Image (cartoon, rainbow, N blue to C red; front, side):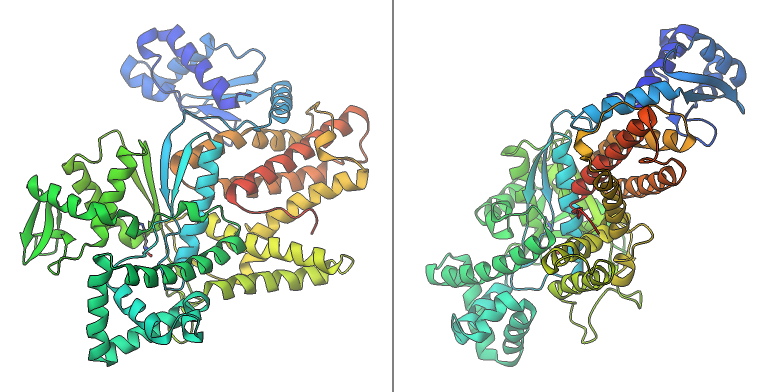
Length: 576
Ligand code: ARG
């Protein structure tokens, strides 16, 4: 089911070749929707220079050679030489029918790439904060979209499960004893567990001494120490999994690729870098200095791969991960959905990996930068005590707010149905709010705005879908069973159908640009176009072919809305 763009771009290219010869065929006929036409080609202006011909004359020659019979009902030249293309209603109608028959709804299957996708990546024995919420939600939407486009996504939950704090954490666990209330905090209130360990570390030199010895034992693979470390890891995994299942994200234990996974590789990474002369010892630490990365004083800033105490750093682990992605997974793109402040870290790690030959030129690493989540004071969201806000509490609040709405709007529904709708709406609202903003932009976490039924919110779109469903319920029809014949007469039908046809290319763009907010914007516009269609074009009161065509458009809208929200990881309640 080709999109208007897919049909018209080659037609314009062919016209250029016919008018001016094959040398000019390559000129991209940039087609964009415009105020004046379904698609506007901006081909004449760039060609005019090369041809030494006035742009309008170039446009006339293109139009004369253009064959769009059966596709366009109008072709016009406007302004300095734009070619305005107006699709015929019949073509739009038959394209919409084709889309309705296609289970993929026009979403292309792209040439398969292998894409390791690093997202969520919280830290063991620490509370997940709203920043991790955002990388989890955005990353999961990208995983779904990329998979749907035909790629092999290898989820990499790069949890922070290794390093010096684990000496202190294991020692604290030993002191309080496995199974004690304090130990259980590791799972129920990780920040409290961490804070208790930290306090001991700061107050008692004796404890600090033992904690340091623990780090050495952990790194040396002492079985007893490893056992306690695994106990901590298990508690954190249960905690993460509770959040993941509440959020409805696709991550499982099989996707865990924590820092500890790369342990055995780290000495080798350092040795190879040193042998190749890429890393040098400076003040006892093994460092990589790259000319492109300089500090304020103009001197290169070091990427530390081995600290002076012999411990390995965050960067070393990331180098090991890249090597694995390239050598074992044969990655085409490596995508990191991680906070924006880590941009420099990744730049330095990639430059080092390229220099070491671990990251070939044809493998593209991409940092999907995640912006901050802010509180009402426009500062990074925290509770009044200054500790990062508890994520589970936020999710519960979202569901409670949605529940208050459902209780008021739908007292007719049984309790358990209302509870389920509230869960879908509350969680959907929080996820959608994360996704609808460009991923690198900060936004204010405002639950009331998120659960609102107006504006570009999850509940607004969920409600739009539920409303379409209710049309079919009223008519005693199933949306999947309607006839798929479309006829277009009214402007609102035309606008809706044209927008529906763009779905596939929007999903493709989301996968290419790694920007879920484009799909949100598309669905928001779809809901608005459906509303004006529904206002202007009676569906159930219409008769004959008009009725069945309108039902077909409604069914297609519902299918796109559900598939679109599904790709974002947002559920659609059957009624609201
Ligand atoms: N655990 C880190 C944090 O919470 C994020 C890890 C991101 N991934 C990576 N490969 N460095 O900040």
